[in-house]
Image: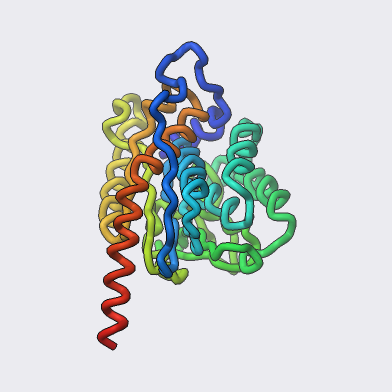
Length: 302
C-alpha cells in the first residue's frame, strides 16, 4: 500500500511512451451510447487504488459522454480525490488536465512524528484552490469521503464542510502520512474500512450504485524485500474486502490496470478507464432498465 501510494505521488504525471504501440488509441475504440437514469437516483462509488486512481477519470469521461445523470459520488482515498473534483462541478476533461499536470512530486511534505513520516497537506492545499471555498453541501452533486477513525477503527463518512480537508483525511495513508484532525477525531485512509464505498453511496441516497474497483492486485507484482510481505498482506486484505463490497453494488466494474500504467504511464490509466466503461455501457444500460422495472413493480404493490 505505501509503495503503491508513493508511486502515485512520484509517477502520476509520467507521460505515455510514444514508441509503445500498446499505448496508441485503438482504431476500434468503442463509442458512447446514450444512457438514461430512468428515474433512479444514480450513485458512483470510486474505490481506492493509489496510482491506479486515474482510471476513475476515464470512467467519468465515459459517463459524461453517455449523458447518464449521476446524482451521488462517494470516494475512498484516491477515489475521494477524483470523485470530489467531479462532485464539485469540474468536468472530466478539466479533471484529467489537473491530474496530469499537477506536480505530484510535491504532494507530501516530510513531517517526522510518531504517527507518520509525512503530511499530505499539499493535497488539501491543491484541492482547496480548486474548490474555491465552497463547502461540500454547496456542490452540484452530493459527495461523501470515507475515512477511518484511528482511535477505534470505525468508518467515518464525511459529507459536509471543508471538502479539501475531508479528502485529505480519506487519503492519509497510515504510517506514511500523519492522521488528520477532523471534528475532534484522528482520521486516516478509508481503505482500511471501505475500499470501495458502495455503502457510502447508499447512505448518500443512491438507489442504483455503480462501483469502480481499481485496487492494486496481489498478483500484479512479486513480494520482495523486508517490507514486501507487509505490503502484500495489505493488498490481500484490501482486495478481499473490496470484493465483498462490490457484491452489494448494482453494477460493478473491476479493473486490472497496473500493466497499462507500467507500459503507458498515467495517460494510459485514463484511457483504460474510459475504454472499460464504454465497453461496459450496454450492460450498464440493461442493469438500469432492470432496476427501474423492479422499482416500478415494488411501488405498484404498495
